[in-house]
Length: 490
Figure 1 (tube, rainbow, N blue to C red):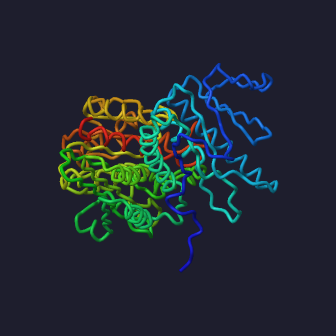
Figure 2: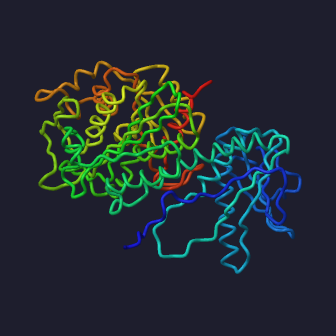
Figure 3: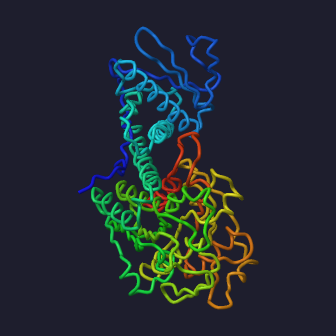
């Protein structure tokens, strides 16, 4: 058996623990609010305490860091955690290169005013800020393995519980990043499906069922089969199920799983096509969220569907002008084969609604370039048929540090979705993000539904806060927190 050249999935993140006692010999960092630097910090360092600012202060007893947390908002603590871990990793690697002994554990003292949420936010930043994904023959650099957060003895239990939960959410983001970053010469629909099966095996209560192309053809999933028809790698539908006993609410999460997107016959420009390995970021977020929801044992039933295909160019690829019949019978007139995401989502939405009769439906996808133009690269677009649902998602994002902006489902464009040759058309004229959402709404049977367009924030070109270049894992934490909001007592 040929060994995969890729890093393991999920990637191993650092460990974060909470304790009331310092570990002897482990270097320390002190978190400082803006404008309140310690008296022993030399003025010439210019340290101000701005969020993410890190200063190394060498001493006879070993290294010591001071780290700014700005005004002390959760986002500032996340940025501080990320910046500190990067600095600690760099120090460990430099020590190893010079023949020294790199620290495996570093410890952190937070401001006295910090609460459980601040500890959790710092842990999130520390876990994700040090994330990296590289396929290389070089030896791995030296890294810190454990971050120890020092807390008063009376609150260690409470703060440890908050940090433990934050770690589970961060692991969801890390897994979603892994799935997005995996190169598409490995990441076929079958690989994505088998990986979902594998990562679910160690989580109690989570089951995964994979539907192959024969099953899809027998049940007339025309959208998935059309989008994947030009590839040598046949499509899959991944079904994840978490059914805790006594749960009274059922959520359906649907994520776009296009493992590579050439644009099909409506070919994409070559310049950015190599980035299309991340076009399954919505599906990755759903897989990662289901794993975390089960691991946290949330009291809500959740079904996840990831329709997965590779949109390629060949003699069997679908064409502009084709008419495709989706699961359930509704037909779509194809305008542009590069709008394959809505084709696979339409099948999955129709199937999920008809089969499971959920209370709420949410889909997430890297769907439209229009949303990148409208909102930039750090904010997700939120469309919803229900005000309370939209607010619940927005609040979940705020809680975990992912920003959403509600977009209008403008009814004046709904007639544009109608087609001449079929029931609906795939790429109606008008504002691209809105018309794509209106198209998907046709397959939701009037249920409370939200569409999350993450075309902008799903991938990053540079480093900021806890985000590093590559797949960002955006939406995974929001989906977990969203599901948690339906648990008992919330």
